[in-house]
Length: 278
Image (cartoon, rainbow, N blue to C red; front, side):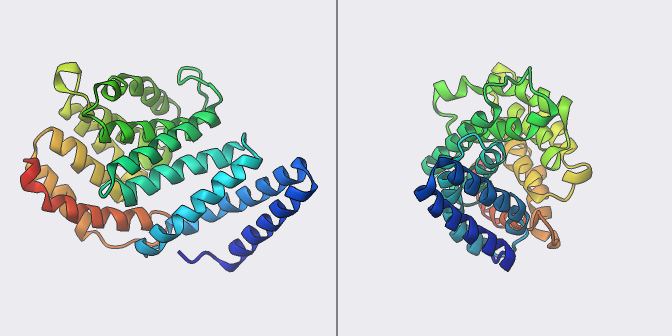
C-alpha cells in the first residue's frame, strides 16, 4: 500500500504535533489528533485502491493502532470513530476471519463499539441521514460477529436487533457503501434459522438488490451473497455461478480494487469447500 508522498508527510507532521502536544497540553494534542485524523480520512481511498493485498494486510494493523492512539487524544472524533469501525471490520473480514474466527470476533466487537461511540446513544429509530455511516458500520460489524458465533445461543439471540437498524438504513440511504443495507438485510434473512423467521428466498432478493447500480460490480457483495444466501438456500448452482463470476471478473481501478482483489482470493477458497457446504 504505497500512499502518495504528501499523505505520508501529513501523517508525520501530525505525529510530530502529537508529541509536541504531550509536552504542551491537551488542547494542542487534540488539535494534532484532528489534523492527523483528517489526513487519514482523506487518504483512505488510496488504501482501498491498492491491488497488492499482502502489502495492505501487513500495513493495516499499524494504521489501526494509529487511529486508536489518536482517539485517546480526541475520543469524540466522530469521523475517526467511523473510520476505526470500518477499518477493524474490514481488516477482520478481508484478512483474519478465515484463519482465526476468534481474533476476527474481537475485531468485529471493537468495530461495533467504535461505531456505537460515534452514535452517542442515538437509537436506530431516532437516527438521521447524518447517522448513516456509524449506524451502518455498527450494524455491519454486529452482523459479522453474529455470523462467526452462531453456535452461541446468547449471540444468536441478538439477531432480531439487526432488523430495525437495517430497516432504518434502507429508509435513510439504501445506496450507502455499494447498497450495503440491502446486503445486510440479505445477511439477516440468511443468518436467522428458518423456524425463527429465516428466509433464504428473501435473502436472495435483497442480495439481488445489492447488486444493482453502484453495487453491481462490487465483488464483495457477490461473495457474501454466495457465502450466506446461496448456502442458506442450499442452491449449489447459484453458489458456483456467483463465485465463478467473481474469479473471472476483470480487475477495476478505483476505490473498490482492494476488496475486489480480496473477494477473488476468498471466492477461490470458498469454492474449494463446496462439498462441505452442500
